Image 1: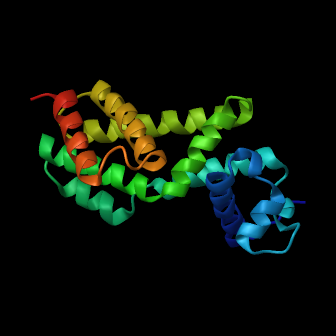
Image 2: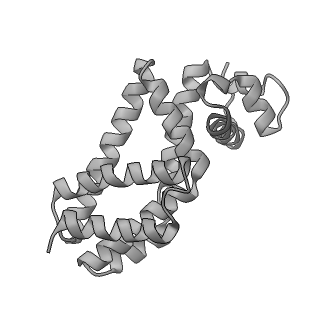
Length: 191
């Protein structure tokens, strides 16, 4: 029987994210999650039906934690609708995602695991597609320059830039990363 304590479940899922980032998908066990969360052995197995359930919930939680807060959204909506504002928005986004290093690394592990687990693949595909669609809709509503293709191209470019930043941090300095984000916006969006 799965437990219903929402705070405990969230803490366990957050612990699963940390384990995925540190140990990889192979290291994700209920015992490892219990240890990371600092709870008695057997706790995670009372909250998740199986390992696939834990993987799926960890994937959902990473996306939940990557969302900007209401203050950031309000500030972005109040900003101008030009390329400079667009570049600032993208630099903030790349910075926010890069700051949640363990979450993004866990997400990379989950993506690899999804190549072998159709249920996880379906969940992640649905979530990524929904996020891309939401980004395109936000872009179109905001009046920012560029079109839906530009949004998708920037999504792809910035995801790889984040991978470089988190896995091989010496490749680009933070200042160079910021310049690259600005250049990508200027070149993809156009004048």
